[in-house]
Image 1 (cartoon, rainbow, N blue to C red):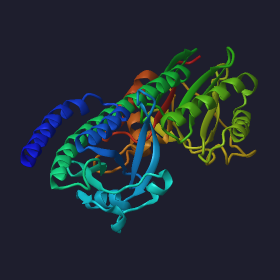
Image 2: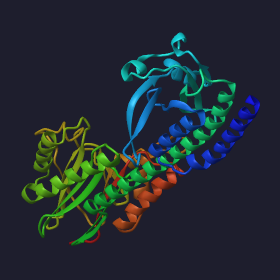
Image 3: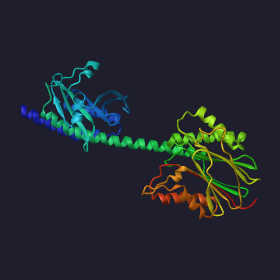
Image 4: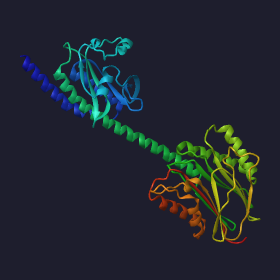
Length: 424
């Protein structure tokens, strides 16, 4: 009679396992999945309760989370177990299942959970959740209802279920990661759209002078910016900035600094030194950051055909005159280090002059051999390039892309090109 009952139980459990496979794969929501798995453990193992702890790689802990609300779509941490702590920690560390039918006589058992909840644990059947050898967590069946403890048949059934549960958990993790990646992509796309609207590509003709400006972030969003300020019919302000910060924070801060420049340009736009000093004070007061800021700011005088500028930081102005490139090596270390001694440079433009201002990102482009492109290669390329400023900027970007041999850029690139196309 006992043999028949045992056989019927095995058949019943096998049928349940077939049904369970579709049940636990019916959702990719982690909260709902945890509820389903723990309920199924109680049902097929006929226990008082069950637990499932997920492995957290960042802390090397096992974390027990419970679902909140009927939908079970939000999880909150209930408690965590260090690797090797208690029976669950031992199973996770050893990657081995275990039956302990008198837990208070087992030195591995940690009674803290019982003390904090008032629950009395007698027997535990615990198994690791493994996916291709990688630990996902552990599951536990606790206190069988109609017998004194767990046996080898329970262990075999539990291991079959743990394999199914591990696959379901991994699928949910894949899904959760995909959702998070899509969320991040959406945020980056939104931030990029905002940044592009605030810092668009520029191609303008101001009298005989053509100006082109472009900023290319290394990621979806970057911390560099450019701006052209039409101060009046005679004066045009030109700015190139670098916050030395990538990602959404860099992009948004760049937009803020750019907005501050636009606001100040109507008052001090014709005075490069004043613009830089005022911006420095504003940034120091309102943007608490340990990162340095670079700013190149110049004023084009269309009547006198002069360009007056200050360079506070890592910007590289290159003058191409008569087919020869000259690096205008003037400037301070960064915006924060610039004081009252800012060096103001006045450049009188001649027919055919090309002035290109670069941030250091394009200089730091590397090829597969690890060699930097550097300033000299760019200066040589500019000496041999003809065309208007749109062509020059596009050629510089293509030159950098070809030199990198397909490697991903690690820094933002910003370029401003100014060319006097004919005498005024």
